[in-house]
Length: 182
Image (cartoon, rainbow, N blue to C red; front, side, top):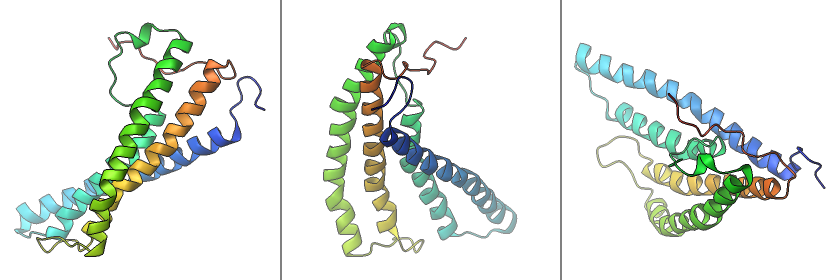
């Protein structure tokens, strides 16, 4: 049984997994910028066009957003209307976050996962390719939908565990600053 201010092993592992994925995918932003710069130079300096390079930027962009969503959730970086939330006590915030996880995050992720499964399966069945002669792996791009769902569900479980522990007084309240920046 965890002691006060000490996270259980499962919560630590789930948060750690999200952290590794998020920090790893963040490096893709630098690669994406370099490739985009190369595309611009090739196009305007040498009149060379590469569909594969342009599509690779789209793939990287999708990967950063879809695989980084759970990391953003972990660090409380999603857009939120803090008019009331910031004035709540730690327990009040924990209740709002727990309800949001249970009644919004989980159902929406399950909806996207169930709805997206057939879409992704169909793409894999034909090994969908780019219609423009670019990257011949559209099915991999579409698979990111299901990976995003899985990562957000994993982090959602961590968030729910954390909020329950806060409500039970086993962890300190939310340390994120929800005040307005001046």
